Length: 223
Image 1: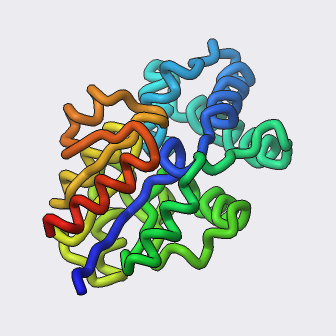
Image 2: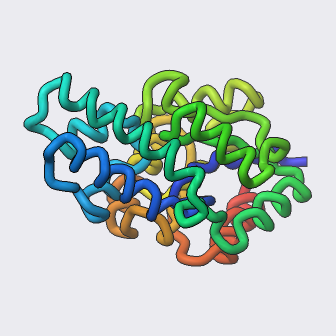
């Protein structure tokens, strides 16, 4: 039996968190007296830890102001997460894909820019806690595009780079995968563009959940 390990990003890959992330970032910036960055700028930092993300979004802000924005963002996210209007639904077919991979003897992991609190809440919301054998987040060490989270996922399950696929929706996910020596597969329904992901090292970018499932099957067959 061939050992196959799939490490998934969360936001923009498995769950549609566009509304809540954009609203929280805009609220945090406006609360600090700054112009809201809006979706087009915010999407470029999805997947990064909040610190580096704010350095991009507010390059002229000092450390104290960035810390204030960060705390406001976290508070807004906690509040909005309770609002049905800002729930982050799973993309159509996401859960079916995860469960079909498990049935086909894949091992699953997570590498996300979420905090541990946010990751735990997402796993609880979707009842996915039993699907993943490893999961690492922004609180566990260097964030994307550093390979730390992928390397730690592989360490926990005993996977080698050539046995590991990283699936994500941003250039940061692709760069992280490449830095870890693994194969990167992009999805175009999230925050990044196809061109950004290919430029960052994606072996392939898929555009629908069934196409992603097929890409994983093809990779397993080649291996």
